[in-house]
Structure formats: C-alpha cells, structure tokens
Image (cartoon, rainbow, N blue to C red):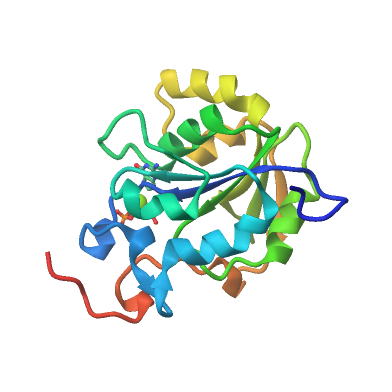
Length: 196
Ligand SMILES: Nc1nc2c(ncn2[C@@H]2O[C@H](COP(=O)(O)OP(=O)(O)OP(=O)(O)O)[C@@H](O)[C@H]2O)c(=O)[nH]1
Ligand SMILES: [Mg+2]
C-alpha cells in the first residue's frame, strides 16, 4: 500500500537486532518509552505505509511478531552490526524499495519518510545531518541486494561505506533535528539503569 497515490510501494525494515550494550544488554526495541515499547512507536508510524513490514531481531521473536508481517534474524548470531540486519531484510523484502529505520528513533515522522520516498529510484536515499550521513535512516532499492551480498562477502560491515560507493542521494536535515533523536541509554528513555 503506497503512503499516498504519488509515493511508491515499499517494504519496511525496522532494525532491532542489536546487542543493546548501552542498555545493559537488554533488547532495546522492547524497552519502554512513553509507556510503550520502542518498536510499537515505529510500527505505528510505518504500518500504514507497507504491506511488507519486516523486523530485524535476534532474540525475543515472539514479542516482536505482533509488530510485523515477517521477522528476519541475522545469518550469524554474533551481532556483526546493522548491515547484517539490512542484508537479511534485503533478502526478504518483496518490493522494489525498502525503507530502513532503527528501532531507537521513535520521533521520526511521516514527513521525513515521505522525503526519502520522494527520491525513490536506483540509488540509495539517505538522511544527512550537516556533514554526517545517518545510514540507518534510508531508502534502499532492493535491486542492490546482490551488490550488498558481494560487499558483505568481501568483509564489508559498515552501512555507510557500503552505500557510499553507490552515489547516495542525500535528504538533508538540520543537525539538531529532534526527529532523529537516537535513544541509546536508559537515561534517554527516562528510566533507571537496568540491572544485569
Ligand atoms: N540486525 C542487527 N541489527 C543491529 C546490530 N547491531 C545494531 N543493530 C541495530 O542498529 C541500530 C543502531 O544500533 P545501536 O543504536 O548501536 O544499537 P545496539 O547495537 O543494540 O546498542 P549498543 O550495543 O549499545 O551499541 C539499532 O536499531 C540496532 O538494533 C546487529 O548486529 N544486527
Ligand atoms: Mg551498536
């Protein structure tokens, strides 16, 4: 289902497969923010955009399942980073474009997503803040699946280095754009530090 008649159909990949080290090793996507799990906020934002909503997670699959059409796990269970999740998502995605968002950015809004979708084509479209790319906020043509696979097999593990070779289109945001806030620590969730 397209976001509007003028925007392309896309798959959505919500990245929630990280180690959560700065959260004391907890599964970040399931941590509560403003009364609900982080993944629930991203689900609500993206659900109307796609009939192919994929969550990349490496544990607690039964708790993620209600928020997705499908779940993917990394091929290796040693947390090789977000590119592992993107790789699994690319292999599963059913549409020509795949919107990628991290689970820990609940303030992303529809306008930001529409700005990415507006550039859908043969190149990656990536958010940039000042000089800094935000590689996990992006729109990827799924035709790049084979390119990604080759890069992965050659040892690439950095999303930014991977798409950097592919003439990405930037969607520029202000350095202080609050929609891109990343919640990486218990303090940012407004919770005490969890026990381990
Ligand atoms: N599939 C997958 N996703 C990952 C992996 N590492 C990080 N991510 C995701 O990438 C996004 C950004 O990662 P971080 O904010 O560093 O999250 P994290 O790795 O769980 O947290 P830290 O361990 O504290 O760095 C989050 O949405 C993570 O879920 C991984 O090894 N596999
Ligand atoms: Mg990390």
